[in-house]
Length: 326
Image 1 (cartoon, rainbow, N blue to C red):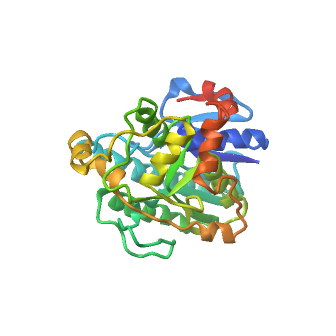
Image 2 (tube, one colour):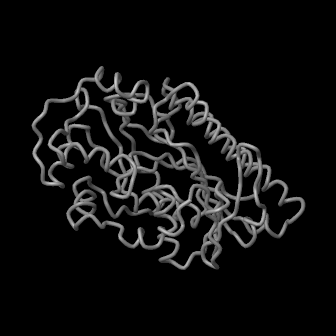
């Protein structure tokens, strides 16, 4: 088996690659850096530039599924210019892939016919900010924030892949828990330095998922030919107060400071501070009903794995993917 991954060197992509290697699934990946392309039988890089619609169509040879994770990080200050990049990176990625697959269907039907599934990343930021709601994939309301706008446009572009004859699914990703990148190390850093605290009231819900479980959700989705929207979160969301306390417990540090007011973080981060205060309590029942079983159902179990067994939660990931970063 061989799959094509965009965003393979990001936090989630690296974990998917690691799990593919453990299961002898070969990977083709797309990168915008020509000088960082790796050519190995089990891990083969191809160049593309979604902003200009350029893609090496050899990337489709021998693949049976596509996982799309590409898109500019939302964890940078949301200037007017960067907001355009966040949106365009997601739109251009999907449009470039769609055009290329459509071309394969006409000119190289053997490549097109081998594809059985397309799974694209999305985000739970589409759900309205609420302290009381419990969101399932059937929710129709969209958050009236920039992030809600991004996800709405992102998912509409992904829906264009229903033009083809393979299954199409979207995974709405929550807060990804890993020591190898993402939000958790940034949250843990001030706590380790005795200046950690919850944000605002601390009552905002945070729907999280261990990076290993999230990678398994992506693989489970295409292997089982699932279609539609699935929430990529764990079974037990927690409040920001609870999460900060559990991180402090996991790293064995006390919490001294009062909660950090919203205006302070908005002064520091600008509009991006919204990410710290938005509340989305999200259900994972739909993917569980398909037969998926979480390895890390509780935040304390996830944090114990990440920090309790030493800092090398995914040591094998570091070994496997260090040479592939691009």
